[in-house]
Image (cartoon, rainbow, N blue to C red):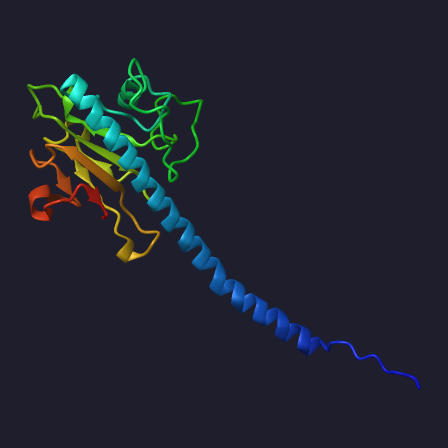
Length: 206
């Protein structure tokens, strides 16, 4: 008896392809969202490590290190390096997963490197800024853009910081922040509003 072999029709193949495409359209955004959430969690953990090292440093030196630019090639702001030597409060500098690659052709370029930004009050000019023991560590956040404006080098006397809020969408604007020391002073701002109106917590977002 001769058996007849029946293959898939073009319509059936198209239906299968359409189903796969629909499933991919659902799965890919969820995967990207999960990736972003994982990176945000990593940033918060990195900042926790830095906070522990900074508090140990201030016990020994009675002040926090100076500012840190996010470009390791910038020789002017290298505060995090103070945590590695001569006493190793941390073994290596941590990288911001939301930062762009280093541009070795421009040692003064901003938003190009692996490092987090730190604005510290410890190296402020006492004639132009409030000199106090306080710091703020900044990650560029999922939008990968610097949300700092104004004279942030004079933190906490001045500077405006935009804050990341995942309730506006996992990939939304704003930076992830970690504050320490006597940061509830001065005239620095969150999202354009004086900090006291926000009553900020140590980690933003929580």
